[in-house]
Length: 569
Image 1 (cartoon, rainbow, N blue to C red):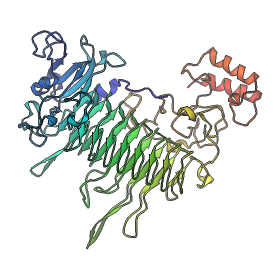
Image 2: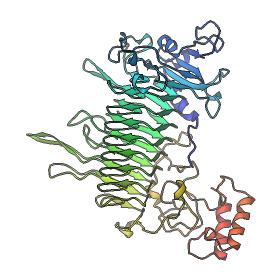
Image 3: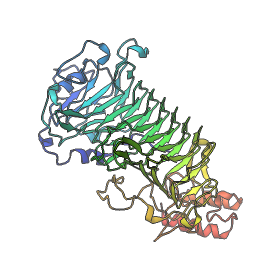
Image 4: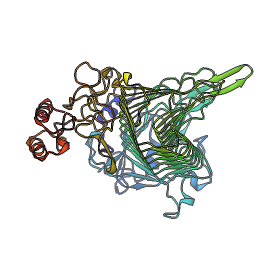
């Protein structure tokens, strides 16, 4: 299954390599138990309070923090950081513009890459009052506001170095009376100039935060960062986006290798909601938000989009790309148990002007066992009225199976479907679609990878394999086909099954996981134990040894297994 919070050094290099000012940046050290000079100059003389280090940090500095629990103390005025407030619940860790904050250290390291794995837990907690009493918690735990630097004074427009939050657990925000979330990143207008929130998040756990407004776990507006290798779990919003609310993400954004689980919303988007943008007849925010190698499990919404609600309310053709993603056990009391993409909206009656529906491109995703009370247990493309445009959604090389709703159980009919396995059928087989049981390995235990003999193996269409936009394998080649699946194993592997898809070469599987029949015991290593386990099952006539998927365990399966084992994964 999923490996959480893997430290991805390529992300660190991408953020910092070659950026102006980074070579001369200082490192400030924070260790709650340090007993030295308390000036942040070394581990021995580290600051004992993170708030102090944040106040002293300048543009481009890094702050290294040892594992411990830290509570915010600065009573931040979120509209003007040069002032503080009198409300103790405004206590917030304010990250200055261009400052990179890393947690998870033991207190002996001389490089970020030397942090241990798993990371030493560094907790930023909003539980500032009576322990365990949420009513006196901080409104927001971490706050980033564009345009302000070290010392929290107004600064210039230099955005050449991104702010970073990496290696922390953020919990305990309770935004019940003011704007906030566990992590609140905010772009701002200064006069007529917009400054975006250039803010990256990696290797973090954002959990157990609540908000009466949008975004329980995270609220990001005018955002130009990415999210990588993180877990967003058990957050709640009374409105939209229990885990994450996005408003006007600027440019192409990436959310990679991240798990969204057990988040809930009183409105739309149990895990993620993108909506509420300022209406524009034309705007610059049309590049897609790409979610790659992400898992959405057991999220819920009281309205639409159990996991994701994505709308174009402020931008023409707002686009959502999903690749190698798994959606399982999500639910909506409205439509779209897993994903709902909104239809267009009218912004003017005279003259008539409207925003187009959202656009979605989903490749190699698995949608299984999601549910909706109204319609569309899996994926729904919103249908507009006469003066509104429909959402535009294409799904390819994917599996939609076991989803439930009173109508359109897997997806609604306006969705373009290619080379996908759809429970109950309904889409043209001439376009490579099938309706046979995909044979998940152990769906009852939450394992939606393919079993040997699956009709979804070697059945996809290679032209629909996504490019490696986020450089998942870290080789600096973003033009190649995506080389890895959701389990970070090779994306295109010959499973030994008959090729029923479209090449050239070996054929991609449908769904988020690639089947490697050669790794018979599924331990990630090709060795003699795979051969031994296969021969035992083959001798017993176990259908798991039916490598070619023809329903018979015979000599052809031996040939297919040995070929798959020899080819590797």
